[in-house]
Image (cartoon, rainbow, N blue to C red; front, top):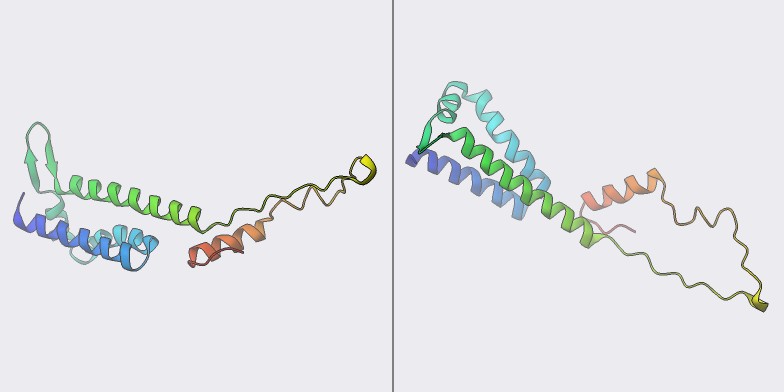
Length: 139
């Protein structure tokens, strides 16, 4: 592997890791995608030449674009794992409700509103989602 290619991918990976660890996983996913796109818009000839360089040619030639796609797939997996695990750890489990025994052994009356008490509305879901994305615990 050429030294220049190795350095470019090393710096790219370190930037993504630093943003992932110190800022936000979602922002690191945006940096992951927009940094190569920005390079294509700013330096199109150099970027296309860089991505089309052959690094390995054992049986099938491996270009720099293949290495970029490998880095993308690895970091997208890491970002997805971090987001799902942070969502799972921030959610609050619902307390278990104990049924009170009915007086005199009579069956309990079930009201129409009681079946809707455990359901969440779209508005509640969006509010909880926004709180999780902001890094707060949902209520």
